[in-house]
Length: 162
Image 1 (spheres, rainbow, N blue to C red):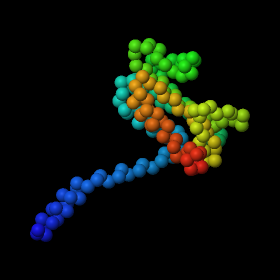
Image 2 (spheres, one colour):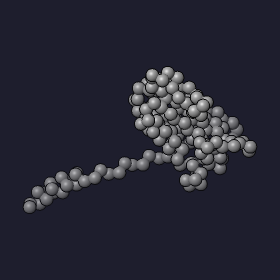
Image 3 (cartoon, one colour):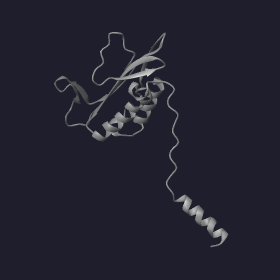
Image 4 (cartoon, rainbow, N blue to C red):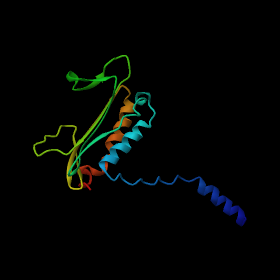
């Protein structure tokens, strides 16, 4: 094989290898940014149940110590069903979705629920509760992944917090 032929062969073989791993994005600088980015990514899925979610944004409440709480709620054709202890369809013949994310700095007497996850950010403790229920199980799984993983870097069990 000639020198030029070898070079062409190497270029062709090198181009056929496994793709380079995606560059890891920097973690969000704040809980506020993490929730906002995750919600924007979830909305970008383009699912019909999220078609009118464009104007929905998380709300944030601050105090002298910084972020006190955050809330995100997007509900379409869903109601809380006390007997089921969770959301369900308002009209059983139509698709539904229930998305809520609550984040707060608990008080000294706060009692976490079974769905609450603990976070530690800059020495402060937070609780976060993500609830996603939908008539489309695949959508539920994807939305839950976007919204729950947004806080992964701060879960107390993962690395002791930032």
